[in-house]
Length: 135
Image (cartoon, rainbow, N blue to C red; front, side, top):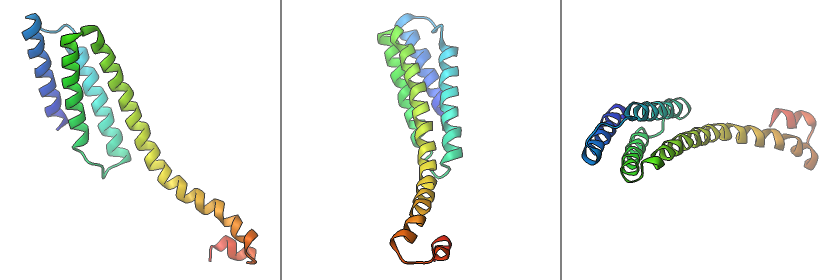
């Protein structure tokens, strides 16, 4: 699906530039490399860290971001580079969020069980062997 998104967005970008300026955009290869690289990195991170996550959301967000980039580049070309920067920032935020989500699930369950184990012996009159075994 990402390949289709890349083709659609590249086509829209070339057509919008041809319609408004009558020439091919000079930075089309940089734009495509940035879009492909960022969305492919997000795909691999989500695939690796959250294999059961929906595979529809990333292509839809990449398509919407590409269309937004095209519109910004038509109205105010200097701001288009900032849109690409914000796409990279959002990719990092997605990666951190997924990593924290995956890591926190394990960390909280281990942290709660480890932190509560010594407290059981302090507040109960159980033997230390009972506390360690968790029975």
